[in-house]
Length: 315
Image 1 (cartoon, rainbow, N blue to C red):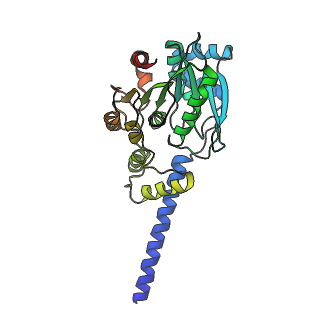
Image 2 (spheres, helix red, strand yellow):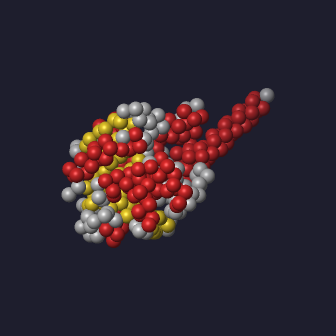
Image 3 (cartoon, rainbow, N blue to C red):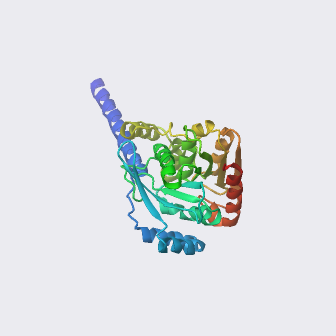
């Protein structure tokens, strides 16, 4: 009898472990390997122009004059990485490196590109992160591995825009987290400042929030197991992928932007990020604004505030 109970208990434990591993593998695939949407350039541009009609003449001009150009680099692990770039209307060393969000691609940053290129007269560089657009990659890396790719784009930028360039890195959503993650790395002197628009504190915090809101599940044990499996498979875990810890090391200026009504990357996340960042820094909580809609809702004020920030710190 005792033997049967023991065997039954062992079987139940093994089933629970198997279910946890299976659920964790599903979670990783769900989050990091969603079905890839193959969107051609014309369709992607049309979608951005539909959401931001005022950028249409600028886009049309870029296409007509073949000013939206492609470039590729190879990451250290052999992954092919793609970016678009556009020169300013007149020669300048001011350059904005613009990082898109989760599930998006470089074209999603064209509205912010319009702000920098058309309104502020900057060169712009718009990378496709891994598993996005024309870049390769087995999985979305949530900004953590992407920070090294962005660093490589920073190193590549002088070959596109000249050795005297100055750079601001500006990201939205996952791109905002990527921006903060790269800000804690050792970077060339020509990187002057950063703009984070609605980035998360860490992958752990964002996935914990999504696990609760989408699946109504606590973090233990699935998130712990998924983080461990992610490290085995992709070389990083959810806790180490921390924008919060990276901004602590950033001594260069950073502007934080977050919608007051954001519940996808909850607004509360911006406060520990802002508090952790050493001076100089500035914070704008955008009223009546949900996730990643700050520029859409307030394009003129967004341009004015960002323009003032970069003008102060771009050397």
